[in-house]
Length: 75
Image (cartoon, rainbow, N blue to C red; front, side, top):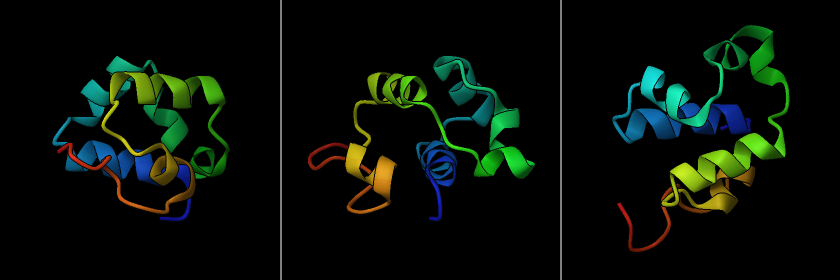
């Protein structure tokens, strides 16, 4: 996946969490994940919030796209 925002959307879809619920929990705005806004960077505070709320996400995958989406031993 080309960027972190694509990976975030992919995670939400694969966790069977509605996008509305995901964005509500993380205090992110869906509008930042569409159109030209999708190409902009995500700030570190937002990344930290996602990792706190969803600790099963592999941080390396989230940041770089490398490795598995979910940490070993978690589903």
